[in-house]
Amino acid sequence: MAKNKVPAVEGWFTMDAAEPRLLGSRCKVCGTFFFPKEADFCRNPACSSNEFEEVPLSTRGKLWSFTNNCYPPPKPYMAPAPFEPYIVAAVELETEKMVVLGQVAKGIEINHLSAGMEMELFLDTLFEDDDNEYIVWKWRPVS
Amino acid sequence: MEVETGLLTGCERIDEMSKEVAVLGVGMHPWGKWGKSFVEYGVKATRDALADAGIEWKDVQFVSGGDTIRNGYPGYVAGATFCQAMGWNGAKVASSYGACASGTQAINNARAQILAGMCDVALVVGADAAPKGFFAPVGGDRPDDPDWLRFRLIGATNPIYFGLWARRRMEAYGATAQDFAKVKVKNSRHGLHNPNARYRKEVTEEAVLSSAVVSDPLHLLDICATSDGGAAIVLTSMEFARKHTTAPIKIAGVSTVTPEFPSTVIEMPNFATDSAAAVSAPAVSFRDSIAAEAYEEAGLGPEDMSMAEVYDLSTALELDWYENIGLCKPGEAEKLLNDGDTTLGGRVPVNPSGGLGCFGEAIPAQAIAQVCEITWQLRGQAEGRQVENAKAGVTANQGLFGHGSSVVVTK
Image (tube, rainbow over all chains, first blue to last red; front, side, top):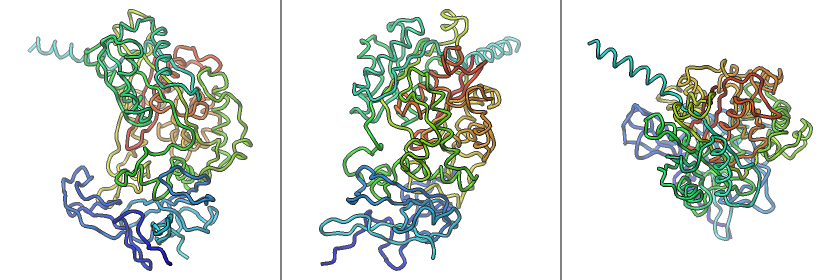
């Protein structure tokens, strides 16, 4: 029986498998973007707004930097056994002018990547238990 | 009017004098994995610092502790735990937590007490007993805490951030894994004869490059370990110091700055940088602002520094610091390293102590230890690693969640 697909964190991204979006927020007064969402106070020191709208963030951006993890990290990361190394990318979103982290698609090697490459968002399984697959956003090079 | 002018002149003179405090004594417990309580490390460092200053525990009027998140109730709320261990003496106490910058916070709080005339003699102390392996967030499910979530959702350990910054140097400036390894080679030589260093063994470039990759491009030997250790400083007013020594070492500037919005470099433990969509990035980045503030207070610049102790959480990060503290322009750090400028005997040795590469990190003690090292260097007591003709030095460091940390120490 297929497991339920549930987000690994609530409200940070849409569960639209075909065109997923990270969900940030934008200050209604000064226009600053936030990810994860800021809903209480604008962090622009020149703005005292407390009104925000939820906004889907750009799905593509340029690779700022990347690295990998070759050893199992401590909990609360739910590392599979045997451990599978993973790459983490920092991707620069042009409209939002911010860099957002995320794991990179399995099968991509470090030597496939270079700064400035165009990357796109997709959804993948972070870990599973008996009932659920826990879903998270990841980045992959635009093919 | 004449009277007022006279008063103003007097105030200005006091103001000029009162910018400095003296480092009268320093002490450390050697770094390592000793399996004892952090309190023991702090007490040993304290006793050494008091003896070095030539004063008694009862003379200490203010105790400024650097806290650790470990060891329960954030390091037993550090300052008072060390007071109790030394034997309650009624001193006033404060405790500071700024993650890796805790030590500088504690130094700055002690300095403020002295400069405000609230006390003449303060003890600054920090000590830690660290777990093995990766630093992990505090236990329990805390889905609102970015430090918990970064492990949960991305597996973004500290070395992941170090790896991102290191790879950025390669992509932006053409740095190589060999350059990073050379930092380790240099620092391993610097620390060879430092009695407080944990690792006192020469390391070759080949050894670094053949050690396991942790977070590409960083190898195991590019990344600092976590250590037990303790460091303490007796800080006093200049007036008090002059009664005890003819050549007091001075703290001329302290920086505990936070970033200016928007901070556009990805930092632990964040998922994203600030957005620069509405407000442009500031002219001076957070890391560039850290030492700049300490220089400004001291009325000195990077060209006046004889040495620097910087936070080499990774070898590549040491190269970033060369640029952040103004030793060279962006993109020139590899040249500075390869020309030998930052090696003992060079123009401005960096991490003459051996740095975190030889020590490992004992969080609340580390920024205090940086000042201990510069003090020994300025007194000419850094046996086996002495910087020639040392006149001034700068420390630099950064604590999680936006804590700048830098101290300028002079003769």
